Length: 445
Image 1 (cartoon, rainbow, N blue to C red):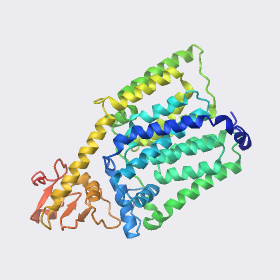
Image 2: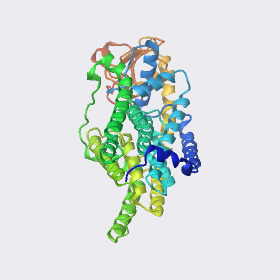
Image 3: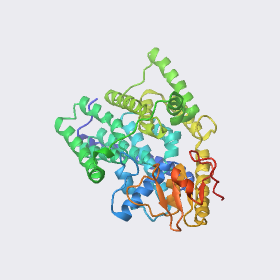
Image 4: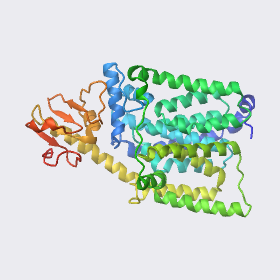
């Protein structure tokens, strides 16, 4: 189906005004649902969230760009720099707002594609485990998803410049967003409205924004920054992340059930109206590309968030209202029911609160040690350095084996134990730390 010309879209604007209240209600509901698990939990459990904070602080204090991790996440790091000195809750609440923007954008896209039950698409996406959990942590997944969802919506509404700029922003938040943006490439190629000139406007805007954000990182570290180390393929981990990560076991079972119902109806000739077939193809192709890319780095279900959002738009096109309701209920159960391969939202919240309190106690205990004492922290180091307000030198990777920082009181914290540390007088390891010699005494809390 050919999208309307810009003039036609403007003429039809008054007819869609009544949907704005629905979008607003969905936005408010998502934010209110996120706040209880966003307040009082710091930046989240993932060490990368604290690495982002540290990168922003180091860059803001020193004036020298420091990436949070390869291949660089400059938009996220700029945001972290702007939030320095503010309470942790500000970053968490802003991420909740970004999560609500993402949900509304994909729900609006579903509505523009003719999905009458678009509120169920938005609600289902909002309560899907991986989207809910990442919507309350200061990670790049959610911010990139918001930019990507708005880019797809802008493309559907025939705004090539805006769509391109938002794609560039999504890539600047999270470079892997380029894989999800393949949906736009399919639309540009197959929809007649997208002339060569309009396609070039989109591409130019995307390149301009991405280059603007990556210019300083590339000038500082060179092209070698743009790299990623592939993880060895592990079948069990990959299946768990693909099946249980996005929606939990209830979500996966619900998807299987409604897919079976839809297949039976399809075979009997009761095919639902597919509406925008090009967009159906575009979203399917993008999901396939994302899954292929995911197999190279299957370390976090958060990588799948764009694919999850696009899947919700697809099921909105393919399923009936009742089936969408069942699927949304299954997704909600996948977020709230504990103990089914992945932790529930409430379990994640409890773990974040416990970890924040525990790390705060660790900082206090380290500060009581004599100057020159050394503590091996492993993956806890980024959060510990953030809570201790440590002076971290530019260029250091707080989750790298070479990371070693001296605190204000003269105590040292290190990611890894070295052979030369055997001669030191006071050497400890944090409770539960693996990868450190077992003979090291545990830091007394």
